[in-house]
Image (cartoon, rainbow, N blue to C red; front, side, top):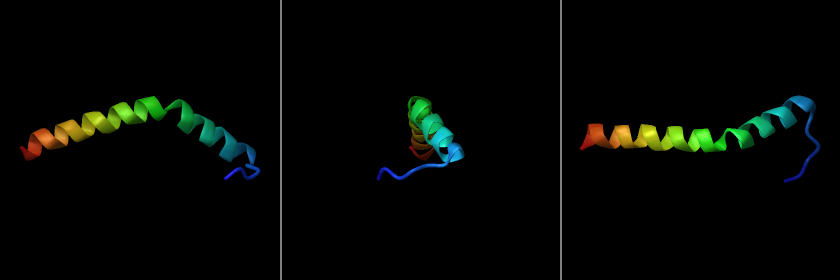
Length: 39
């Protein structure tokens, strides 16, 4: 899906790519806390 992005969309997609590592860590952290609460 390579469509021409306006500057805001391009900046946003670049931000999401740069932050994917942090989003993954946050997701794992939240999920492990959630599983501890459920257990």
